[in-house]
Length: 406
Length: 158
Image (cartoon, rainbow over all chains, first blue to last red):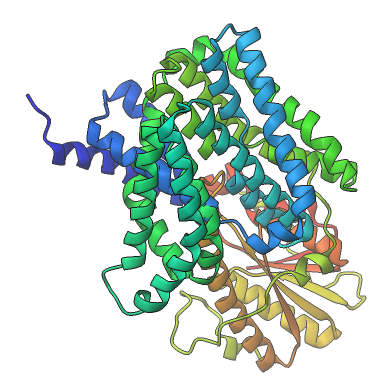
């Protein structure tokens, strides 16, 4: 009997809603919980994907990548260009080559399978790094901005590798490159013009539709050239980052659409193909690949961090943070699986390593190498812009009123 | 029945008799926190101490997928904390005491202890939150942890 599309959609959305509730309750990223939901649904509830779910999931990955590119602060990147380029490139290249070599030479994976391993484990999670730095007070310091800029360079390397390594070098690729270059050149001005002329008044969201049009069009060209749609999505995000920095409403709208409807399908699907038996049998490989990733990050990043005059403690901290990964790691692994490059067991190994790399280096960095930031430096960076005292806004029940304190 | 460890540690205002010079209040807007603030303001008024009120922003999403997810949670938490701190300053004005309000993201107990240590405070004032017995028994409250690790005297206000 053919499945009712509405019931299928409802069951996936039920998982997404449950993930949101758990995420809010326990303060864990909704992405991680959605992946976990996918693992449960795939291993115990018999969930499967359909072509329309695959499409929504691809769209989710594309918009996530676009948002990741758009989150960069162009001024900060310009200010820290040289050290962030050096650290970011080393942070991509060394783990990419090391994981590739290890997967091919030690694990016996084929050349393309090992390349997928290299790409998936080369990533740095900007979001994980940012979250840790907010809690340590580093996010608003110069060191924090340098680290974030370096993370964007690493992710750019990852996305570029994914887009180029498996592409067909033919006329379609040339056309894709040419159209992308022209689009990227005109896009910031066009987007600003659209927002300026229509964005403030039109309720039909023309600027959001315009960005979707660009992403879909370039995504179509990329996949025709056997490249990956996330490559143009990241580039489009990068060039409109300046616009997004000023227009927070547009960012909010794009984010709402993505997180409510698209990314749940992506993350649940990413978890769906994780096989629990394959985790058990592959535990040694998982541990080895995680070690390879972190060790390669240390070889690549640590000396450069020291060369940038970071003390050893801060150097260790930066290196461990740059060993984290999540979104791009799962995107790369899922690309390998859906294109038939890797099998489900290999996918399981890679996604598990990626998720562990979000957690393990973060915990180590926080526990052992938290930088000591003087109060003055830390608090100088915190804006003290406080909204006016609310007259009617209740702050909940309390036994003391401000007026009663005297 | 023996008293909860916290109850055993509730301190009277400076047992050494020396006046407090620098008082830190952990404040998250609960009824207990308002009682702690009131006590701290009274102490500050009598001892001539300076008062810092620290609001710790907790429960930000760990291991986020996008910076935006974190930013949105942080912005909302910052907004809530800023509103609370505006009320704190208003209350301090009424009490005739000057306070400094600070917001920080992180683990509540650790952030309070670190701030007290870095700032050289000689008294940390907290309100008792009143968790259930089972919850407090297994996990411990913020007060438990602060009392255990604080570098200065701690006053838990019930």
